[in-house]
Length: 386
Image (cartoon, rainbow, N blue to C red):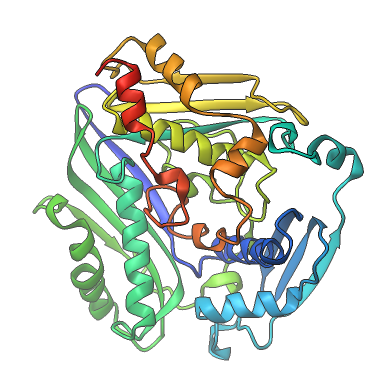
C-alpha cells in the first residue's frame, strides 16, 4: 500500500539475457520489413535454446527477408561471438516457420485511409507517467535500466573485459509517501569469464556500475547483492531458454500501474498491443508534464477491426490538480485514438523498433520516440485553466 513509507522493486535485463535476445531478433525482423515495406504485417515470435534459434509467426510483406542473416547479425551485435560462451553467432542453428497473416484478420485492418484502419486485435493497453523523475517514469525501473545499460557499455568498451553478455539487475527504492528517498538494496547478476575473482567482480560492479548510476540514493544502509550465488559463467540461452514477450513489465513501468498483458516486440503498428500502449504513455506523460496530476495512468481498449477505442480511462490516483472531468475532456479534444491515426501521429511505419527493445520502451528521449514528447502539455494546461 502507498501509505507512509514503503519499498518498491523493479528489475531490468542486459542485451544478452535470453528473453531479450529473442525480443531483439523479433524487432530486427520487423525493422527490416518496415524499411522496405512500411505496410507489411508482422507478428514475429522467437525462441532461443542451447545452440538454436527458432523464428516463427505471421508475416505478410512484399520484400525479401534474410532471417538467418538478421539472427546472426543481432547475436554478433549483442556480443555472442566466442565459442567458449557455448552459444555464438557463427555456429547457432536457425530454424524458421513463418506464414502469412490470416485473411480473416487482414480484412479488418487493411483500409484506404488512416481513419479507416482497424485495430489488429481486441484488448486493453495502459500507459503511465509520474513526476518523480525527469523522465516522468518511476525511479526503480529507470535506475534498473540504467544499471543494465552501464554494465553493457563497460563490457563493450573494454573497461570490464571479463564481463559476458547476460545479466539481470534489480533495485529496491524506499519511498516516503510518494517520494523516493533512498536505495534499500541493489541486486546485480552479471555473466563473466571464469578467471575473474568474485572479490574483484563485486568491487568493480559496485564502483564502476552501481555508484555512477544510483549515486545520491545510496547510503550506509544500502544492501548489495552482486552475483549472489558466487559464480555466473554459464549464461545466455545455454543456461536458460528465451522467448519473446516474457519481459513485458521490464519493458514498461517496472510493476507500477497496470499492464494489458500484450507484448510489444515483433509486432507491426497495426497491433494495438504496441501502438496503443505507446499512445497511452504519450497521453499520460503530457497530463503529468502539464501539471494536471503528479501521477497518471491511461487505459485504452479496442475490438478487432474497430476504428475507435471502446473505452478511455484516466486515473490520477487522487493527485489531480483540476477536476478530472476537465482532464478527460481536454484529452478527448486534443488526442486522436483511432489505430490508424495513432500510427500516423507517432510515425510508426518506420524501422525504429530495434531501438526500443532493450532498456525500456518508455522514459528514453530518443528522437524517434515521438510518444515521449510533451508537445501537448501546454494545450492541456490551457484547456484545463491552469
